[in-house]
Image (tube, rainbow, N blue to C red; front, top):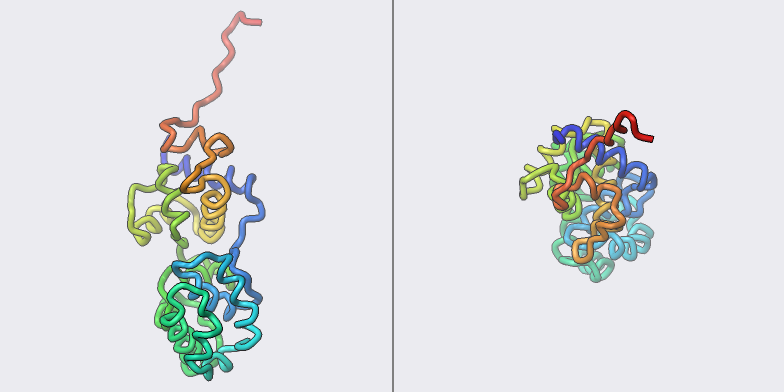
Length: 223
């Protein structure tokens, strides 16, 4: 099976089994998503979602967060991995939003990537989920692992995995593709205990050594 055909099968089948696939970082506006995504680096979405309700209540806007004291921010997110560095990033990010973007979250990868604590992955998350702008594919640990297992890429660096996937899937699918592969990785293709018998991609998954086979035609003269 060609990779382009495999990509089509993967997207179609995952869309059917995970029609509810979505960004699992709770947010109600672009600023909240930006903050949550910065916090999510090397931290679970579940943990971030436990911290952000109180954080958003205390700092509901870039203007409020820009004036936060470092020690107060550290206290607010102390249960998050690397909370000290992320505290500096959040305050710096909010200050730049106010100073450079009138308190609005920018809508380009270039502008977002210039903000403290923001890289291409974070920019892709925000643009795709807050603004429905597909500029790239978010490659986290789940996307990287499942894409490799399925045979969609042989690359190991996130940037190169992203480039491979962008060639295989149409632009309008990029944001949803990440959600679908993340759902696959979290719910079925679990790293420590993959449930291959429950996966609707097991017959096309490169890690099983199988490929999609065309149905056999009935022999003439058989009943």
